[in-house]
Length: 110
Image (cartoon, rainbow, N blue to C red; front, side, top):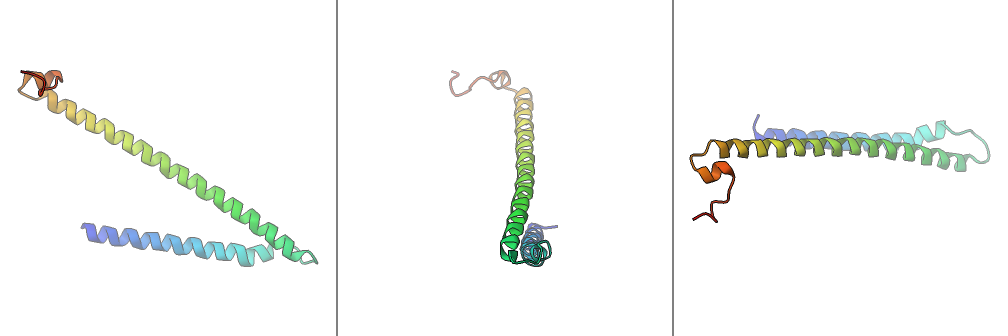
C-alpha cells in the first residue's frame, strides 16, 4: 500500500471518529439527558445536572485514552532511541579505523 492510500485511510478514519464523537455527544446531551431526569417542576435544572455529569464522564474517558496514547508514544520513542544507539555502536565496532572503534572523536585526532 503506497503512502497516498495510507494517508487517505488515516484521514478517513479520523473523520469517522470525529463524526462519531460529535454524534455521541449530541445523543448523550439531548435524548439521554432528557430520559435520565425526572419529569417535575425542576426539570431544566435536572437536565443541566445530568448533562454536566455526562460531560465530566466523557472528559475523564478522553483524558484516560489520551494518557494511554501518550504513554505508548513515549515507550515507542524510547525503543527507537535504543535501536538507534545499538545501530551506531555496531557501526563503530565494525569500522576499520581504530579511533572510531574506540569511540574517540576523529576531528580532534591528528
